[in-house]
Each structure stands twice: as C-alpha cells, then as structure tokens.
Length: 328
Ligand code: ZN
Image (cartoon, rainbow, N blue to C red; front, side, top):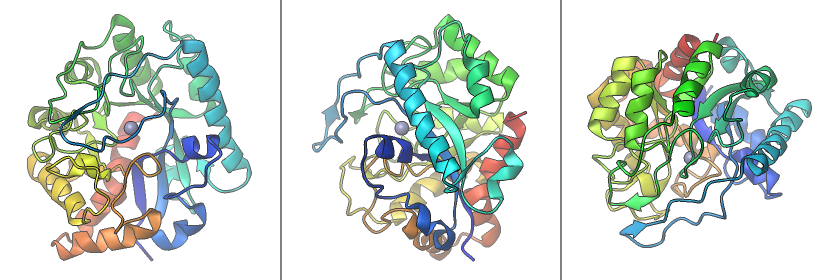
C-alpha cells in the first residue's frame, strides 16, 4: 500500500473545463499511486499563460477579471467538480475526517477570490456548496488583494497589501471555517493576512525563495510566520519554482523537490511541510510525470533519509492537522 498523499494543489478542473485530456491527475491511477486527493482549484484563467522560456523573466501582472465573468466561469468549473462526484470519480470534502476515506477526496478551493461579491454576500452560499479553501488572489489584482507577477529573479515584494474588503474576507473565512491560502499573494498582502487571521497561515503550493528566487516563492521571514501560526507550506513541483536557475526545464530531478522540503523542514520544523504539486497547471519533472510518479517521489525522500513518521507528516498528516484546526 503506497503512503496516502493529500496534495495542496491541482488544476484538473481547468483542464477538463477546457475540454483537454488530463496529463497528471489520472483518476484511474489513484489506488496504486497513493493519491488520496486534496485541493482541486477552481481557477478562472487569465488570457492563456505560457511558462517563461528564458531567464531572467518579468511577466507583466495579469489584468483584473470582470467579476461577473469570473463568477460565471467559476460556476462552470465547480460544475465540473460536482460532475466528477456524480460520476463516482471522487467525493467533495466537507469535514477533515473525510480526507482519508476510501477513494479520492476533493477540497473545493477557489484560486483567486475574483468570483466573490465584494460585500461577501455570496460567501455563505459558496460554503454551503462545499467551498472550504480560498486563495485571495491568483497572480493579478482583485477587489481583495494583489497577486505577484511572475518574475525571476525577484522578491515577492511587488505591490500593495489587502484592501479593507480583503481583510473582511479573511475574517469571514475564519468565522465560517474556510482555509485562507496565501500562495500567489504578494509579500505585503501576506503579512496583512498574518496580522488579521486567527487560523493557521497556509501557502498551498509555494517553495523556498532562498533556493529559487521566484516571486511565487516564500522568503524566510514568511516561512517563520507560517510556522509560528501552526500553518503549512505545500511544496510545489513546478520546475521553474524549484530550480536555483529558474529554468522551465522538465529534465529536473526529483531531488529538487526533496531539496525544498528539507529547507522548509529545517527552517520551520517537520510539522509545517506538506506537498502542493501544481499537477495539471505547470511543468512537472519528467521523472515524476503525474500522480503515477508519487511512489517514486516518496522513495526519493526515503533515500534522502526521511523516516516513515516524517513521510506521513509530509504526505498527509500536516494537511489533516491544519484542516482540522481551520474547518468547523
Ligand atoms: Zn497556482
């Protein structure tokens, strides 16, 4: 039996909404891979984003979405998720205990709060549908906050912090028991969340900036704040956020994922490191492929000296703890 993996981020819903074949999250490979599910992003795409092919790069900040467009597309993406549930391919999680039940469990995650009304009047409706995680922003501005543009090398200190309604959204998520995700958020906004939130601070799919100087990664004092809050960072497998040289090179060894996880564990402690693949949404190491490569990834950690207790924390226990503490 492979070790169960709860994963911080995948873009399967976007892939299916676009009518494309899944590449990484093949739901008929879940049993042998150990993939137990995790965060399934409802991400309303900006104009098609291509991974930068040269380094250094500085991609302009994406344009804001019109809220009614974002709400309509988010509804369609959510329908894709519930279609998978109706077909018996997965279950949508409402309580933390459900995560490791048999089969695949999906956390309904909004990657960017763009579809939400600025007066938050629809947040409870979203919660009732199953929403359990909100990333305040993707890499663009919205009514709540501003995301980081994709730059390398550059720090995540790229713009202003949360708006007043952004702060209100964090408090409303705390009240309802919805996880607040800081991946894609800029540095000032991140520390605004740290100041406002009463829940563990989380970055579902980000890496260590000290090892890879992408705006999408987290600086050491951000890692310290996450650890102090009891939160977690999901290591992102996107090669451009792993490699020291920032290249979008699929010939990137699995040891790069271990390198980031070890840095995060050294800085924050083993209770604060998890996985956040970015499957279906980014360039993965060819050696991994999709979820079928997860047992090989776990073996790479074993070869690097990770014992079974540490692996359980990394692969699911840390996510489960944070969800138990955050959800109602
Ligand atoms: Zn993302």
